[in-house]
Amino acid sequence: MDENTGLITSKLMENSKKYFIETYGCEMNKSDSVDIALSFEEQGYKRASGGDDADIVILNTCAVRKNAEERIFGRLGYYRSLRKTSEKNTVIVVAGCMAQEKGTEITRLFPEIGVVTGTYHCLDIPQCVEKYEKKGKSLIAVDRKDYTFSSYKGERAEGYKAWVSIIKGCSNYCSYCIVPYLRGPEASKKSDDILQEVKDLVSNGVVEVNLLGQNVNAYGKDNDEISFIRLLEKINGIEGLKWIRFLTSHPKDFNEEMIKRISDLPKVCKHFHLPVQSGSDRILSLMNRKYTIRHYRTLIEAIRKYIPCASITTDIIAGFPTESDGDFEKTLNIVRSFQYDDAFTYRYSERPFTKAADIREKVHPDTSKKRLEELIALQRNISYEKNRKAIGTRKKVLVERKSKKDTSEFLCKTETNKMVVVKTEAPIGGFIDVVINDISGNTLRGIEAQ
Image (tube, rainbow, N blue to C red):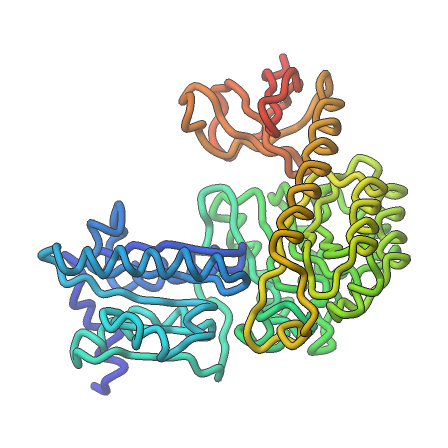
Protein backbone atom coordinates (compact mmCIF):
# COMPACT_ATOMS: atom_id res chain seq x y z
CA MET A 1 0.00 0.00 0.00
CA ASP A 2 1.49 3.38 -0.99
CA GLU A 3 1.53 6.42 1.32
CA ASN A 4 -1.36 8.26 -0.33
CA THR A 5 -3.63 5.22 -0.35
CA GLY A 6 -2.88 4.66 3.30
CA LEU A 7 -3.79 8.24 4.13
CA ILE A 8 -7.09 8.01 2.32
CA THR A 9 -8.21 4.64 3.66
CA SER A 10 -6.87 4.53 7.20
CA LYS A 11 -9.43 6.89 8.83
CA LEU A 12 -7.29 6.96 11.96
CA MET A 13 -9.52 9.60 13.52
CA GLU A 14 -12.79 7.88 12.71
CA ASN A 15 -14.23 7.53 16.20
CA SER A 16 -12.82 10.51 18.07
CA LYS A 17 -11.55 13.42 16.00
CA LYS A 18 -13.68 16.49 15.38
CA TYR A 19 -13.27 19.37 12.94
CA PHE A 20 -14.61 22.92 12.92
CA ILE A 21 -14.59 25.41 10.03
CA GLU A 22 -14.67 29.20 10.26
CA THR A 23 -15.47 30.80 6.90
CA TYR A 24 -14.62 34.36 5.89
CA GLY A 25 -15.45 36.25 2.71
CA CYS A 26 -17.50 35.55 -0.36
CA GLU A 27 -19.96 32.87 -1.44
CA MET A 28 -17.15 31.04 -3.23
CA ASN A 29 -15.44 30.58 0.14
CA LYS A 30 -18.71 29.37 1.67
CA SER A 31 -19.00 26.86 -1.15
CA ASP A 32 -15.41 25.72 -0.61
CA SER A 33 -16.20 25.17 3.07
CA VAL A 34 -18.95 22.74 2.07
CA ASP A 35 -16.34 20.72 0.21
CA ILE A 36 -13.87 20.91 3.09
CA ALA A 37 -16.54 19.59 5.47
CA LEU A 38 -17.44 16.73 3.12
CA SER A 39 -13.78 15.80 2.69
CA PHE A 40 -13.37 15.49 6.47
CA GLU A 41 -16.59 13.55 6.95
CA GLU A 42 -15.59 11.15 4.18
CA GLN A 43 -12.55 10.31 6.32
CA GLY A 44 -14.66 9.64 9.42
CA TYR A 45 -14.29 12.99 11.21
CA LYS A 46 -17.23 14.51 13.07
CA ARG A 47 -18.33 18.14 13.03
CA ALA A 48 -17.56 19.97 16.31
CA SER A 49 -19.96 22.43 17.90
CA GLY A 50 -17.24 25.12 18.01
CA GLY A 51 -13.53 25.76 17.81
CA ASP A 52 -13.07 25.10 21.53
CA ASP A 53 -14.39 21.57 21.08
CA ALA A 54 -12.45 20.71 17.91
CA ASP A 55 -9.32 18.69 17.27
CA ILE A 56 -8.84 20.43 13.92
CA VAL A 57 -9.82 24.05 13.31
CA ILE A 58 -9.89 25.28 9.71
CA LEU A 59 -9.95 29.01 8.99
CA ASN A 60 -11.12 29.36 5.38
CA THR A 61 -9.85 32.84 4.70
CA CYS A 62 -10.44 35.94 2.60
CA ALA A 63 -7.86 38.42 1.31
CA VAL A 64 -10.02 40.84 -0.68
CA ARG A 65 -9.73 43.61 1.92
CA LYS A 66 -7.19 44.34 4.62
CA ASN A 67 -9.77 44.34 7.42
CA ALA A 68 -10.67 40.73 6.55
CA GLU A 69 -7.06 39.73 7.11
CA GLU A 70 -6.95 41.64 10.39
CA ARG A 71 -9.99 39.71 11.64
CA ILE A 72 -8.33 36.42 10.73
CA PHE A 73 -5.09 37.36 12.49
CA GLY A 74 -7.20 38.12 15.55
CA ARG A 75 -8.73 34.64 15.42
CA LEU A 76 -5.30 33.07 15.02
CA GLY A 77 -4.24 34.91 18.17
CA TYR A 78 -7.23 33.41 19.95
CA TYR A 79 -6.37 29.87 18.86
CA ARG A 80 -2.74 30.43 19.84
CA SER A 81 -3.93 31.20 23.36
CA LEU A 82 -6.34 28.26 23.30
CA ARG A 83 -3.55 25.83 22.46
CA LYS A 84 -1.57 27.06 25.47
CA THR A 85 -4.40 26.55 27.94
CA SER A 86 -6.20 23.53 26.48
CA GLU A 87 -5.31 19.90 26.97
CA LYS A 88 -6.08 19.35 23.29
CA ASN A 89 -3.23 19.78 20.84
CA THR A 90 -5.55 21.42 18.33
CA VAL A 91 -4.36 21.37 14.73
CA ILE A 92 -4.79 24.83 13.19
CA VAL A 93 -5.33 24.99 9.42
CA VAL A 94 -5.29 28.23 7.43
CA ALA A 95 -6.92 27.70 4.05
CA GLY A 96 -8.17 29.77 1.12
CA CYS A 97 -7.21 33.15 -0.27
CA MET A 98 -5.10 34.58 2.57
CA ALA A 99 -3.22 31.29 2.78
CA GLN A 100 -2.58 31.50 -0.97
CA GLU A 101 -1.37 35.10 -0.65
CA LYS A 102 0.91 34.77 2.35
CA GLY A 103 2.07 31.16 2.32
CA THR A 104 5.06 30.60 4.61
CA GLU A 105 4.72 34.11 6.07
CA ILE A 106 1.74 32.88 8.11
CA THR A 107 3.73 30.13 9.77
CA ARG A 108 6.53 32.56 10.58
CA LEU A 109 4.04 34.80 12.36
CA PHE A 110 2.15 31.91 13.94
CA PRO A 111 4.39 28.83 14.35
CA GLU A 112 1.42 27.06 15.95
CA ILE A 113 -0.22 26.66 12.54
CA GLY A 114 0.04 23.10 11.34
CA VAL A 115 -1.26 23.33 7.77
CA VAL A 116 -1.50 26.12 5.18
CA THR A 117 -3.46 25.27 2.05
CA GLY A 118 -4.22 27.62 -0.83
CA THR A 119 -7.18 27.87 -3.16
CA TYR A 120 -6.24 24.80 -5.21
CA HIS A 121 -6.06 22.42 -2.24
CA CYS A 122 -9.27 22.68 -0.19
CA LEU A 123 -10.14 19.06 -0.93
CA ASP A 124 -6.71 17.88 0.26
CA ILE A 125 -6.88 19.29 3.80
CA PRO A 126 -7.63 16.00 5.67
CA GLN A 127 -4.63 14.32 4.04
CA CYS A 128 -2.46 17.36 4.79
CA VAL A 129 -3.53 17.23 8.45
CA GLU A 130 -2.66 13.56 8.69
CA LYS A 131 0.76 14.16 7.17
CA TYR A 132 1.38 17.00 9.59
CA GLU A 133 0.41 14.86 12.57
CA LYS A 134 2.76 12.11 11.47
CA LYS A 135 5.76 14.35 10.79
CA GLY A 136 5.15 17.16 13.29
CA LYS A 137 6.26 19.77 10.79
CA SER A 138 4.12 22.52 9.26
CA LEU A 139 2.82 21.57 5.84
CA ILE A 140 2.33 24.28 3.21
CA ALA A 141 0.47 23.62 -0.06
CA VAL A 142 0.01 26.81 -2.08
CA ASP A 143 0.98 25.71 -5.59
CA ARG A 144 -1.55 26.33 -8.35
CA LYS A 145 -1.37 23.08 -10.26
CA ASP A 146 -4.09 20.67 -11.31
CA TYR A 147 -7.19 22.43 -10.01
CA THR A 148 -10.17 20.07 -9.89
CA PHE A 149 -13.81 20.88 -9.26
CA SER A 150 -15.52 19.15 -6.37
CA SER A 151 -16.19 15.46 -6.83
CA TYR A 152 -19.00 15.44 -4.26
CA LYS A 153 -21.63 16.95 -6.58
CA GLY A 154 -25.01 15.66 -5.41
CA GLU A 155 -23.74 15.41 -1.83
CA ARG A 156 -23.23 19.19 -1.61
CA ALA A 157 -26.84 19.86 -0.67
CA GLU A 158 -27.40 21.98 2.41
CA GLY A 159 -30.94 20.90 3.06
CA TYR A 160 -33.17 22.34 0.38
CA LYS A 161 -30.51 24.48 -1.37
CA ALA A 162 -27.03 24.11 -2.81
CA TRP A 163 -24.13 26.07 -4.23
CA VAL A 164 -22.99 24.88 -7.65
CA SER A 165 -19.63 26.17 -8.79
CA ILE A 166 -19.66 26.48 -12.60
CA ILE A 167 -16.47 28.48 -13.23
CA LYS A 168 -13.41 29.04 -11.07
CA GLY A 169 -10.92 31.89 -11.07
CA CYS A 170 -10.96 35.27 -12.77
CA SER A 171 -9.15 36.66 -15.82
CA ASN A 172 -10.26 40.30 -15.55
CA TYR A 173 -7.45 41.75 -13.42
CA CYS A 174 -9.38 44.71 -12.09
CA SER A 175 -6.66 46.99 -10.80
CA TYR A 176 -7.87 46.87 -7.17
CA CYS A 177 -8.56 43.13 -6.95
CA ILE A 178 -6.25 40.41 -5.71
CA VAL A 179 -8.53 37.50 -6.66
CA PRO A 180 -6.96 36.61 -10.07
CA TYR A 181 -3.58 36.28 -8.37
CA LEU A 182 -4.98 33.91 -5.76
CA ARG A 183 -7.58 31.84 -7.61
CA GLY A 184 -5.97 31.73 -11.05
CA PRO A 185 -7.52 32.27 -14.48
CA GLU A 186 -11.08 31.44 -15.44
CA ALA A 187 -11.79 27.77 -16.08
CA SER A 188 -15.29 26.50 -16.76
CA LYS A 189 -16.68 23.20 -15.52
CA LYS A 190 -18.06 20.95 -18.25
CA SER A 191 -21.73 21.63 -18.84
CA ASP A 192 -22.66 17.93 -18.75
CA ASP A 193 -21.09 17.69 -15.28
CA ILE A 194 -23.03 20.75 -14.09
CA LEU A 195 -26.33 19.45 -15.41
CA GLN A 196 -25.80 16.04 -13.82
CA GLU A 197 -24.82 17.69 -10.54
CA VAL A 198 -28.01 19.75 -10.47
CA LYS A 199 -30.10 16.68 -11.29
CA ASP A 200 -28.44 14.75 -8.47
CA LEU A 201 -29.04 17.62 -6.05
CA VAL A 202 -32.70 17.83 -7.01
CA SER A 203 -33.07 14.09 -6.47
CA ASN A 204 -31.71 14.70 -2.95
CA GLY A 205 -34.41 17.27 -2.16
CA VAL A 206 -32.82 20.52 -3.37
CA VAL A 207 -35.29 23.07 -4.72
CA GLU A 208 -32.92 26.04 -5.16
CA VAL A 209 -29.44 26.15 -6.70
CA ASN A 210 -27.08 29.11 -6.76
CA LEU A 211 -24.62 29.03 -9.66
CA LEU A 212 -21.27 30.42 -8.56
CA GLY A 213 -18.25 32.02 -10.13
CA GLN A 214 -16.06 35.07 -9.69
CA ASN A 215 -17.35 36.04 -13.14
CA VAL A 216 -20.28 33.73 -13.67
CA ASN A 217 -21.49 35.09 -17.00
CA ALA A 218 -18.06 34.48 -18.57
CA TYR A 219 -18.92 30.78 -18.37
CA GLY A 220 -17.87 28.83 -21.46
CA LYS A 221 -15.68 31.54 -22.97
CA ASP A 222 -12.45 29.83 -21.93
CA ASN A 223 -13.27 26.46 -23.52
CA ASP A 224 -15.69 27.35 -26.35
CA GLU A 225 -18.39 25.15 -24.86
CA ILE A 226 -21.96 26.36 -24.37
CA SER A 227 -22.56 29.94 -23.20
CA PHE A 228 -23.81 30.99 -19.78
CA ILE A 229 -27.28 31.81 -21.07
CA ARG A 230 -27.51 28.43 -22.82
CA LEU A 231 -26.48 26.74 -19.58
CA LEU A 232 -29.23 28.63 -17.73
CA GLU A 233 -31.76 27.48 -20.32
CA LYS A 234 -30.71 23.84 -19.89
CA ILE A 235 -30.83 24.02 -16.08
CA ASN A 236 -34.24 25.73 -16.28
CA GLY A 237 -35.52 22.55 -17.95
CA ILE A 238 -34.56 20.23 -15.07
CA GLU A 239 -37.72 18.75 -13.58
CA GLY A 240 -38.23 19.30 -9.84
CA LEU A 241 -35.97 22.34 -9.57
CA LYS A 242 -37.87 25.44 -8.46
CA TRP A 243 -35.45 28.39 -8.28
CA ILE A 244 -32.13 29.23 -9.94
CA ARG A 245 -29.86 32.03 -8.72
CA PHE A 246 -26.44 33.10 -9.96
CA LEU A 247 -23.60 35.42 -8.98
CA THR A 248 -21.47 37.34 -9.54
CA SER A 249 -22.06 38.94 -12.95
CA HIS A 250 -19.57 41.23 -14.65
CA PRO A 251 -21.17 44.05 -16.67
CA LYS A 252 -18.71 43.65 -19.55
CA ASP A 253 -19.98 40.10 -20.15
CA PHE A 254 -23.68 40.97 -19.88
CA ASN A 255 -25.91 42.29 -22.65
CA GLU A 256 -29.54 43.00 -23.53
CA GLU A 257 -30.01 39.76 -25.46
CA MET A 258 -28.97 37.71 -22.43
CA ILE A 259 -31.37 39.64 -20.19
CA LYS A 260 -34.21 39.15 -22.69
CA ARG A 261 -33.63 35.38 -22.76
CA ILE A 262 -33.48 35.22 -18.95
CA SER A 263 -36.91 36.89 -18.86
CA ASP A 264 -38.29 33.78 -20.59
CA LEU A 265 -36.90 31.39 -17.93
CA PRO A 266 -39.47 31.05 -15.13
CA LYS A 267 -37.12 29.29 -12.70
CA VAL A 268 -34.41 31.96 -12.83
CA CYS A 269 -35.02 34.27 -9.87
CA LYS A 270 -35.68 37.89 -10.71
CA HIS A 271 -32.63 39.31 -8.98
CA PHE A 272 -29.48 40.68 -10.59
CA HIS A 273 -26.30 41.46 -8.68
CA LEU A 274 -24.42 43.72 -11.06
CA PRO A 275 -21.36 45.45 -9.52
CA VAL A 276 -20.86 48.98 -10.87
CA GLN A 277 -17.95 49.97 -8.53
CA SER A 278 -17.96 53.65 -9.60
CA GLY A 279 -20.13 56.15 -11.46
CA SER A 280 -17.11 57.79 -13.10
CA ASP A 281 -15.83 56.52 -16.44
CA ARG A 282 -12.38 57.87 -15.56
CA ILE A 283 -12.27 55.81 -12.38
CA LEU A 284 -13.72 52.77 -14.14
CA SER A 285 -10.88 52.99 -16.65
CA LEU A 286 -8.31 53.17 -13.86
CA MET A 287 -10.03 50.19 -12.26
CA ASN A 288 -9.66 48.27 -15.56
CA ARG A 289 -13.36 47.42 -15.49
CA LYS A 290 -13.63 47.38 -19.32
CA TYR A 291 -17.06 49.01 -19.56
CA THR A 292 -18.49 52.52 -19.39
CA ILE A 293 -21.45 53.90 -17.48
CA ARG A 294 -23.22 54.18 -20.84
CA HIS A 295 -22.92 50.41 -21.34
CA TYR A 296 -23.90 49.74 -17.72
CA ARG A 297 -26.97 51.94 -18.14
CA THR A 298 -28.13 49.84 -21.12
CA LEU A 299 -28.10 46.78 -18.83
CA ILE A 300 -30.18 48.48 -16.14
CA GLU A 301 -32.64 49.73 -18.77
CA ALA A 302 -32.90 46.24 -20.29
CA ILE A 303 -33.64 44.67 -16.89
CA ARG A 304 -36.33 47.29 -16.22
CA LYS A 305 -37.78 46.70 -19.70
CA TYR A 306 -37.90 42.91 -19.82
CA ILE A 307 -38.17 42.07 -16.10
CA PRO A 308 -39.74 45.14 -14.45
CA CYS A 309 -40.32 43.32 -11.16
CA ALA A 310 -36.64 42.39 -10.78
CA SER A 311 -34.47 43.64 -7.95
CA ILE A 312 -30.98 44.96 -8.69
CA THR A 313 -28.09 45.08 -6.23
CA THR A 314 -24.54 46.25 -6.72
CA ASP A 315 -21.02 46.76 -5.29
CA ILE A 316 -19.42 50.20 -4.98
CA ILE A 317 -15.96 51.29 -3.87
CA ALA A 318 -15.46 54.73 -2.32
CA GLY A 319 -12.07 56.41 -2.21
CA PHE A 320 -10.32 54.69 -5.12
CA PRO A 321 -6.94 56.34 -5.80
CA THR A 322 -7.29 59.77 -7.52
CA GLU A 323 -11.10 59.80 -6.98
CA SER A 324 -12.12 63.46 -6.90
CA ASP A 325 -15.20 65.09 -5.43
CA GLY A 326 -16.58 65.20 -8.96
CA ASP A 327 -15.95 61.51 -9.52
CA PHE A 328 -17.69 60.65 -6.29
CA GLU A 329 -20.65 62.90 -7.12
CA LYS A 330 -21.07 60.88 -10.33
CA THR A 331 -21.27 57.74 -8.20
CA LEU A 332 -23.96 59.32 -6.02
CA ASN A 333 -25.83 60.35 -9.16
CA ILE A 334 -25.93 56.84 -10.61
CA VAL A 335 -27.15 55.48 -7.27
CA ARG A 336 -29.96 58.04 -7.35
CA SER A 337 -30.66 57.24 -10.99
CA PHE A 338 -30.56 53.44 -10.90
CA GLN A 339 -32.41 53.08 -7.58
CA TYR A 340 -30.71 49.90 -6.43
CA ASP A 341 -32.57 47.67 -4.03
CA ASP A 342 -29.36 47.36 -2.04
CA ALA A 343 -25.65 48.04 -2.40
CA PHE A 344 -22.56 46.52 -0.83
CA THR A 345 -20.31 49.51 -0.26
CA TYR A 346 -16.65 49.58 0.73
CA ARG A 347 -13.72 51.89 1.20
CA TYR A 348 -10.86 51.20 -1.17
CA SER A 349 -8.42 48.73 0.37
CA GLU A 350 -4.91 48.52 -1.06
CA ARG A 351 -3.93 44.96 -1.93
CA PRO A 352 -0.57 43.42 -2.87
CA PHE A 353 0.12 42.49 -6.51
CA THR A 354 -2.53 44.94 -7.80
CA LYS A 355 -1.83 47.84 -10.16
CA ALA A 356 -3.90 50.28 -8.12
CA ALA A 357 -1.41 49.88 -5.28
CA ASP A 358 1.16 51.62 -7.51
CA ILE A 359 -0.97 54.72 -8.04
CA ARG A 360 0.70 57.42 -5.96
CA GLU A 361 -2.22 59.80 -5.53
CA LYS A 362 -4.28 58.28 -2.73
CA VAL A 363 -7.52 59.59 -1.24
CA HIS A 364 -7.11 60.63 2.37
CA PRO A 365 -8.67 58.05 4.75
CA ASP A 366 -10.89 60.70 6.35
CA THR A 367 -12.21 61.67 2.93
CA SER A 368 -12.91 58.10 1.85
CA LYS A 369 -14.60 57.41 5.18
CA LYS A 370 -16.85 60.45 4.77
CA ARG A 371 -17.72 59.45 1.21
CA LEU A 372 -18.58 55.93 2.28
CA GLU A 373 -20.86 57.23 5.04
CA GLU A 374 -22.64 59.50 2.57
CA LEU A 375 -23.04 56.64 0.12
CA ILE A 376 -24.43 54.31 2.78
CA ALA A 377 -26.92 56.94 3.97
CA LEU A 378 -28.16 57.54 0.42
CA GLN A 379 -28.60 53.84 -0.35
CA ARG A 380 -30.23 53.14 3.00
CA ASN A 381 -32.94 55.72 2.22
CA ILE A 382 -33.50 54.28 -1.25
CA SER A 383 -33.71 50.72 0.11
CA TYR A 384 -36.18 51.81 2.77
CA GLU A 385 -38.44 53.55 0.27
CA LYS A 386 -38.41 50.57 -2.09
CA ASN A 387 -39.27 48.23 0.78
CA ARG A 388 -42.00 50.57 2.02
CA LYS A 389 -43.66 50.39 -1.39
CA ALA A 390 -43.81 46.59 -1.01
CA ILE A 391 -46.25 46.87 1.92
CA GLY A 392 -49.60 45.42 0.88
CA THR A 393 -48.15 43.29 -1.91
CA ARG A 394 -48.33 39.49 -2.10
CA LYS A 395 -45.08 37.54 -2.47
CA LYS A 396 -44.09 33.92 -2.92
CA VAL A 397 -41.31 33.08 -0.46
CA LEU A 398 -39.03 30.18 0.36
CA VAL A 399 -38.88 29.28 4.06
CA GLU A 400 -35.18 29.34 4.99
CA ARG A 401 -34.64 29.09 8.76
CA LYS A 402 -36.00 29.90 12.20
CA SER A 403 -35.55 33.40 13.54
CA LYS A 404 -33.02 33.65 16.37
CA LYS A 405 -35.12 36.34 18.06
CA ASP A 406 -38.42 34.47 17.99
CA THR A 407 -38.51 30.74 17.23
CA SER A 408 -42.17 30.98 16.18
CA GLU A 409 -41.03 33.15 13.27
CA PHE A 410 -39.12 32.13 10.17
CA LEU A 411 -36.80 33.97 7.84
CA CYS A 412 -38.01 33.57 4.31
CA LYS A 413 -36.65 34.83 0.99
CA THR A 414 -38.49 36.24 -1.99
CA GLU A 415 -37.64 35.50 -5.60
CA THR A 416 -36.08 38.98 -5.70
CA ASN A 417 -33.70 38.02 -2.85
CA LYS A 418 -35.36 39.99 -0.07
CA MET A 419 -35.78 38.63 3.44
CA VAL A 420 -39.26 38.43 4.97
CA VAL A 421 -40.00 37.50 8.58
CA VAL A 422 -43.17 35.39 8.82
CA LYS A 423 -44.96 33.29 11.42
CA THR A 424 -45.71 29.99 9.73
CA GLU A 425 -45.94 26.26 10.33
CA ALA A 426 -44.62 25.51 6.85
CA PRO A 427 -41.47 23.34 6.71
CA ILE A 428 -38.04 24.75 6.00
CA GLY A 429 -37.53 24.45 2.26
CA GLY A 430 -41.23 24.93 1.55
CA PHE A 431 -42.86 27.72 -0.44
CA ILE A 432 -45.66 29.90 0.93
CA ASP A 433 -47.49 33.05 -0.14
CA VAL A 434 -47.24 36.02 2.19
CA VAL A 435 -48.64 39.53 2.32
CA ILE A 436 -46.09 42.18 3.28
CA ASN A 437 -47.47 44.25 6.16
CA ASP A 438 -44.50 45.99 7.80
CA ILE A 439 -40.77 46.80 7.75
CA SER A 440 -38.30 46.17 10.55
CA GLY A 441 -35.03 47.95 9.81
CA ASN A 442 -34.25 46.81 6.27
CA THR A 443 -36.19 43.56 6.59
CA LEU A 444 -39.74 42.99 5.38
CA ARG A 445 -42.35 41.46 7.65
CA GLY A 446 -45.39 39.58 6.43
CA ILE A 447 -48.31 37.36 7.28
CA GLU A 448 -49.05 34.08 5.60
CA ALA A 449 -51.71 34.53 2.95
CA GLN A 450 -54.95 32.55 3.36
